Length: 389
Image (cartoon, rainbow, N blue to C red; front, side, top):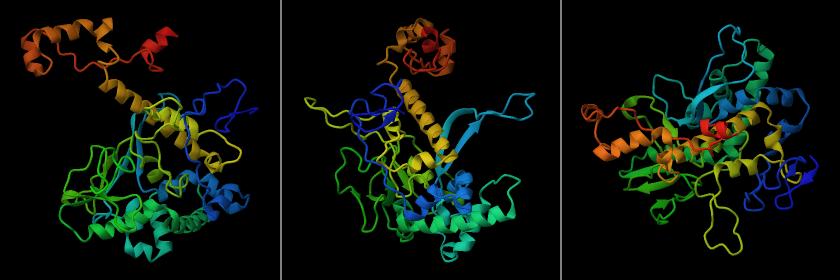
């Protein structure tokens, strides 16, 4: 890397555009804070313990995470012997979180482990429960498993001390145990939902990321914390891709101090002569975050396979939010002018069948072709984009 961005200090290769990192100074995010000393040592040292940590960092992060990350993987083609040089996913990535207390017939997992009083009093038992939820390689030796248990003990103690999400989840479980009527604990999609009065979302003393919602329904993308699942079942909530808590709830070893991720209210840096402040897109956010800057902490780029997982998640999030926008803004992108769907849309408009059920469409002689979502040529990888290349 031979060039340095004059606006944000990012290093870049000679062939990369000057606006690649920060859009020419329009994007400015706070630097990631340096990790606690115990974690920094594991990222940088060359000891056996540190090498084991970096080799199994994805397993350790999964064991310590507050939320789960799931995806549908496409199996390797037949005749390959199961070998897959890369992972192929189909559909969305799902960030999920369960109730704060595990059902009586199930062991605690993810955030529930931090809440469990018996485990909190026995760090060795807590580490053993965490390791039991992780699928280690079959060849993992007993000596390595012992080192992993020791690492989990150190890291879970660190997160209890410094991570605001862990702190708030523990306090939230205590507050929910009081069962005050008409009170809900939520994690809002932004620090405070835009347009909401400060008194509606109250932060009790001691809580930093979780707020109390009194007597009103939460917003569409707010994450509601529940003490127990309704009906005693282990129902999981899906965290929306646009929620600021997506990144810190899962990647606890990348963001041990709880640094929030992208959300729709992330604003660009103020620009001279522009009255209306623009928002940072998902792509701009992660393009800025992934750059190497010599005078900022580099722990993110030391994370090996966990960093690769984070990059894949970021790409999937960018694509999911783009597709969601295209799906909900078909009129704005003038999708009905594409020849491939013009006739079907015109037939629906003439017969007034837009809201008619499928049976009525069939009786009227209009074929049922489902809801059409057209990908414009600006969507990279879409059929129109590929034809225009």
